[in-house]
Image (cartoon, rainbow, N blue to C red):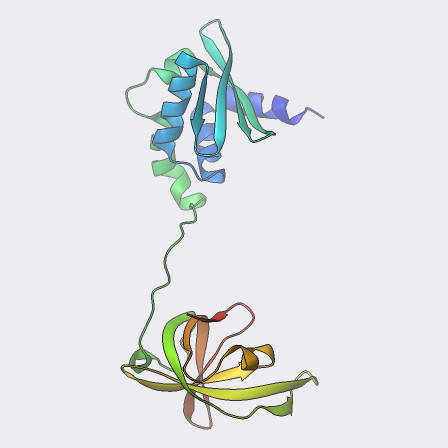
Length: 209
C-alpha cells in the first residue's frame, strides 16, 4: 500500500489544480492567497498561508516539489511544473469557482440573525432571539414520554414587540432569573394548549447576555 506522501504526489502530478483546489477547501484558505504563497515559496523557498507553512524542497527538470505542513503535521508533498506558477490567472481559483464550490462548499461563520417576538410563528426552527425574563414559574416534576422524571418550568420573556413563554427543563431552570437578558439560539416555536411557546433543545443555546 503506497504511503500518504506517495498518494499525494501522484494525485498532484496527474491533477495539480484539482488537488490544490481540494486543499484550499479542506483547510479553508483563500485560493488566491494559497496560489501567491506557492509562487512566493518557489522564489524564496518558504512562505505561509494562514496556518499552513509552504516550503520549496527541490527544483529540477522544470518541476518544483513543495512540502506543506500545519504545525508538526505534514499536510501534503507534491510536484508541479514551474509553468504552473507563472500563469497570469490563478488556475486553482478557476477550478474552485467552476467546480468545487458546488460539491465542497466552504463553511462560513455567520453571525446569528435575531428575530423579534412579534415575528415568531408556530413551527419555526433555528430561532435566534434576545429577550428579557419577566417571570419564572415554580418548577414541577413531570414524566416524559420516554419514562424519565424531569423538572419543567415556564419563563415569560419579552422584547419591545411582545411576550412569549420559554419552556425550561432541568438545569435550564436554575440558569435564568427574573431580570436577566437572555441570548437564545437555535430554538423552535411550538404550540401548547393553543399558546405559543419556545423550546431550546440540546442543540440550542440559552445564556445570560
